[in-house]
Length: 157
Image (cartoon, rainbow, N blue to C red; front, side, top):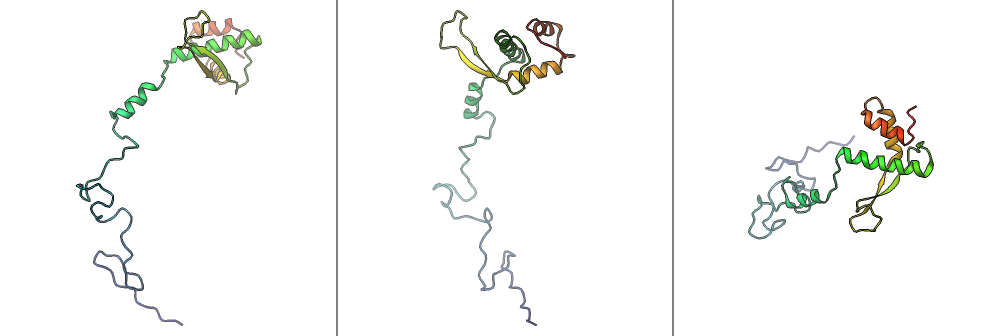
């Protein structure tokens, strides 16, 4: 049976040394760093440059620009868009038995006279999911919306 060797002595920092007596080095992200290793000249080891790729402050200018470019429609506007898509589907197909995965493309914007203006955009709406949701929410829909959907051929059962 082999004899067991005693564990290597601990370093002043409390870490054990390897069998050859050398320390294992510092763990990543622990202990002091050399000045200038990760920081530009003039910043000490405790002064870190903030990350520029991911802004963290809610008032950061980059995030503000991102919010401006997002299109956020009000729920009433979204409902009207989906209703328009449903009406176009009904006029083309003659029914509203829309497959659940069906998407409908509609043109939004413009002045309505058929000109191809620059303010028009094509949107793709998940019409099948929307029709299914309207059927399941029939008890909570307003009477006006129920009537609008019934006028374009909605079957509620």
